[in-house]
Length: 208
Ligand code: TZP
Ligand code: MG
Image (cartoon, rainbow, N blue to C red; front, top):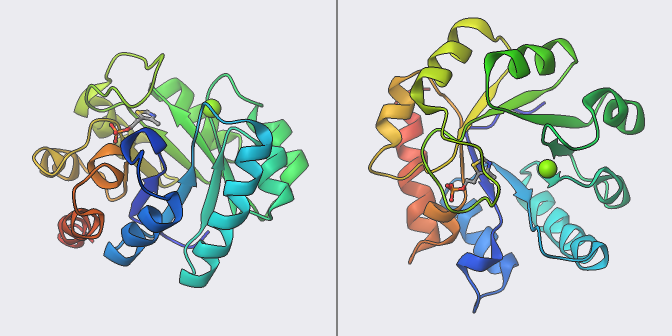
């Protein structure tokens, strides 16, 4: 897996009057180096179309493109990988379908889930929500920076900190040991998407 540090996720509710391709392109131009399609209210057909277009955009910038939840859509558009939660298709099944070369990321909320994902062959894990966030419905309670520190100590595969990360609190996340962060609203919902991404990218440079 190509390394990454600033992982950006789509969220159409944050740019109702803009086209997702334009928003994501600005995020990439600002420094996002991994992109995920995550839209919970779209049909499979709509997602397939978005995935195809985002994959083409990401290919142009040589940025890995990941599909949330839908292994079939990831395969159909030859995405670089999938991101799966604890209630989605299990890692072992997804790996059987996708083979060894695709990226599989797993959301985790505690060390037990993190260890299981690592042992199961996940390429990276999500660690969060670090802070409260309204972006995700049915979100579990924030796990805080303590879980980030535990992952730094006990897990060897790459992890991304996610959830409520903003410019004003990102320093705490980096100080806890995160070298990769995953952002929705603070980038795609920003007034100036490119500048917002750029500001996070600059913060990340200080720890890399
Ligand atoms: N998973 C855990 S928190 C979250 C996801 C998808 C949402 C993060 O969004 P934001 O706007 O960066 O808090
Ligand atoms: Mg999911």
